[in-house]
Image (spheres, rainbow, N blue to C red):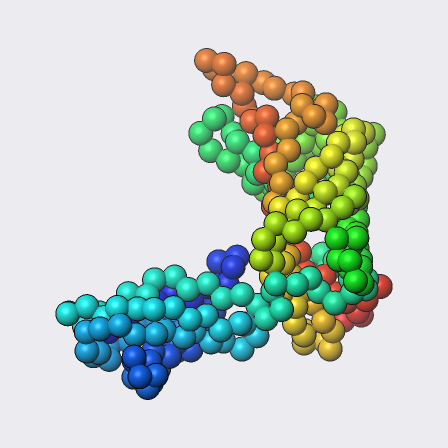
Length: 273
């Protein structure tokens, strides 16, 4: 018997300080429980069968409310509750924002041998976001990535990826992205239109962007968090290396999934920590 729930952020992190309040049909509170470090709520309080309202709150997040039915066995399984950061339906305040590489990641995933995935990341990059006042669709994003900073956790593979078979980092040392437009794609979701320069080739690439919210940091600054994904085709950027290992299966897939987790600090530059 009792109530169970999982409290998560939009990008899947546990909200360990969430509070769950349950009220009955008269609005009276009948249960109050806190999530554990895994964002899980497991309360054994016995409730009478019937309909209840579940309200989830957490500092820095917008409250979430839903209905719940307590069964004859006295159980109420609320399931996963997703909390959005306060202000999540808008973009950050207007002005310049500087990407913090120490708290951000630029990753890519490729299929390997048709059965598994290889994960890599670029360890050196810079970025700037300009949130336009008034018309936020006029906001701009620019980023520069050092091609030779690719890291897949395997030195031999990384050396091959830096070679002329792939990134040719000696000839094309940087990868750049510059936005050309921004359109809304739902609550706190946007499509960033832009141009990616990779391996000396320029192609239009759209990013599926989720704005995760804005808040203060321990150093007195203000930070905004974003998650973005995109899909690239190697052939579009003249990355034609394609070793066939057996039965027509390529060693490395032709599609790359780009995954970005970004923290940006308000202002023209990063603070001195």
